[in-house]
Image (cartoon, rainbow, N blue to C red):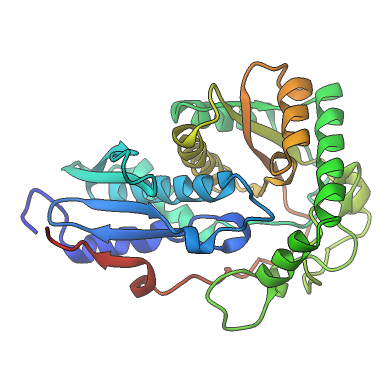
Length: 331
């Protein structure tokens, strides 16, 4: 490539960072194509979860998170991503075409990109320390900068959200197909390139105060203090959009990445919670009872301080770059 666009090594490095993005049960449902003058993001429907994610919303949000990770990585490498979202209506899996403009990386770009390898999904109980309002306000602002509404859920609205989470869990766990997908994608064997390993799943109870976390395969991750299970002071932030279409979900994924990276930079632990939005009835409940019917919920993000003396979380596996990045065939 010429001097007016990244060379191949730079793009490969940026895509490798993008693939560190969180995805539903670490399915990594994306693929990238390298064109002559651009980079292209596609949804990989072969990695869909029809029982867990029947509408494919989690899949698209996952791809949006990877797209934002790419933007962050490119900025740190001296390139601004010019993103054309859903560029081809005839190819619904073609989620983004990315072109490039040179830019001077600043300290903020580099610092944010440096958080990518350190971000983890922490499913453990958080400490009893509340997250300062100033940090929550910054997370909300970061989501809104991506064109997505965000709000911390408090008081009665939080009670309604917790009820929706528990109701969705009961509905899904009664479905044999759902249970089969959970078994397939969680508690994966050492050396797997996708899925959630047992080393990243808490052992024992996943009831943290009034919050019921999703039941996954048996885990090996110890909680630091059983008292934390009842004293967890994590905050719940709901991301929402004015519409509930593919573009809205892609944008919500980009906002998810922005919030999670900012939370990591602030020293917070974080965990996306999609379960209450995977069941139509509970998604409607969140929309009407938590958001007042004003916007469409896309994802819940739980943030808080990790437990005292909590062990560092291992990185979850990632697919080899050769499996997700190919050259675009010339017409």
